[in-house]
Image (cartoon, rainbow over all chains, first blue to last red; front, side, top):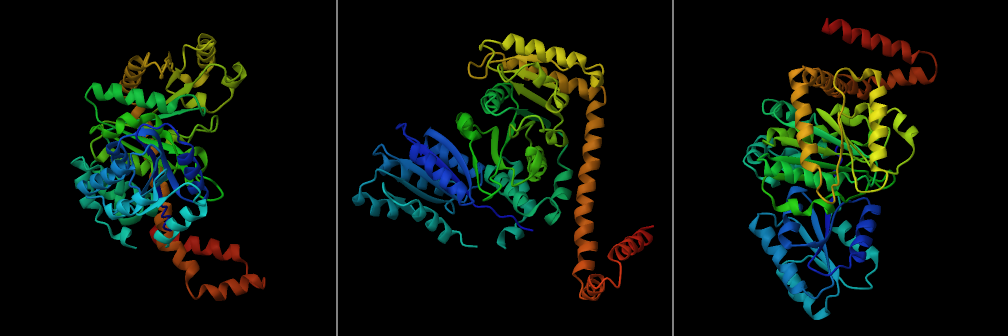
Length: 132
Length: 323
């Protein structure tokens, strides 16, 4: 009888206004059977974490094209920790230099997808995390 | 399944103290396992019955989310705590969904007195998920004074909301079609309050007049004529009047026993569904799943016995026992 759905919040933090990538990901995840809560542009990390907690999501995916990834990712991780919600997974994508990725992962980001990553990589990543 | 063993009572206590994570968990639990598991409704019942439950419906693009955002802000300014359940459709093919109503309500995320939850229909017709009424009860039990349910804008067949809400706000906009659209049965008959949104668009006056005319002609309306208000959600114009009108209507319904009549009907339907589920699981399913049923089914399939006569006999036996 159980109808367990994986819920994923897709958000676009910071000031850059290009949400095409986030929308493509939202659509891809919907087609893979996930429930996507799409919150749109210009979200603060505080808003993102508050929404993730109210919505009881399993994971947060953010798209960052502005170069502010060095702040935004760790800040979300920190807020999740503060609110005892570290079980919520954080992944992301965007224009993120290869050199910066190890640091972000060390901070607790589960995975980073850079431009050109096949959509299947993202769904495979989630499937491996949430294999039932 | 670890989720199924959650201590619902503990989550409820945390939710009542304003812990949104606990509220989120409870709603997920209901979405996953249904209302009848873990005696959830039994635990909630003593704490419910206080919230004003308002359904909001209307065509896609009519501005439901934007208006909801502004209404919540108005009510917060008046000191109410407000819960929002925003329902969007799920794909009939993959079961996945994009729930995008929060895009218009981002300012509300950090307000302590507001809780917003997006829900998908999970394949339910009529645009409401079964878990929706459970989520309403949870928000009611956690002390939200007003619970808004924003439903999928599927249009004229959207009447399922009546089975969850105390009263229904129908939102329309100019330019959706001629007056024939307004005569069609469905949404028009379930509205307690009507709002013509985007009132600055050309034709808004006409839409409002036509709507009013159709409502005037409805013979079942009784004494209470639903008000039609013109608003602009985008410009935050007329929203306060709309909110006040909703509360005024609620007050009238309470005084005239209409509210009691509606809650009476709703509770009957809910109880029937609840008992059906319990009886199915505890009485009927065991009959069909029993080993001895194999013999029966073989008899039926070879046409040496009649399955319908058998079913009738079983039901009669059950009936006999509860008499």
